[in-house]
Length: 219
Image 1 (cartoon, rainbow, N blue to C red):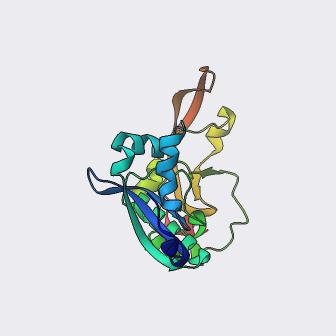
Image 2 (image 1 turned 135 degrees about the horizontal axis):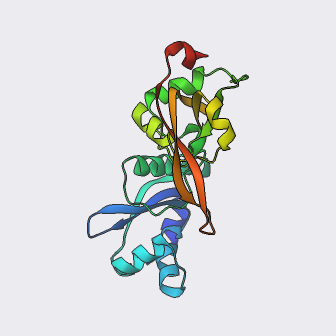
């Protein structure tokens, strides 16, 4: 399938979705010009590339995949923003999209809860940590726009920390994408059995704790 010459000339930059006809759910969001929307089908048919996207196309059978143009007649800069917003929305709504990369600038201006937006624009720089604090990055374990309980669950385990440091650590600070989004105290540390990449047993650490009082969080 392909657009004719007149359509290619006039459509401009556009954003599209590949849709599974079995449940009418989008499984890929993209942007492009001319016949970009059809390139995925052609690649799935002519090349032996393996990915979740191509596997899904072959599973559906390429001829049945729906091609939906979500917005067209745009400039490239507009298409970039629309694509990024739709990828973020799809992930927030747990649509089974197969996009590997997040949308453009998703980490800095992508979907957030209202509280997270306020935290982002009101957050002063953190320029000092008390000796008993440990800063834990939860980029991989936390999904934005989640509850405070989700922050705690994403932070509580399991981390590589030198055993000799554990008795002195009384405050955990959860950091996500460069911002503090949780602070926990009254910690009770425990060991979490784990294995390294070679299958060798290692010890990681988790904790039970409570959300810190406002004066500590503000500090």
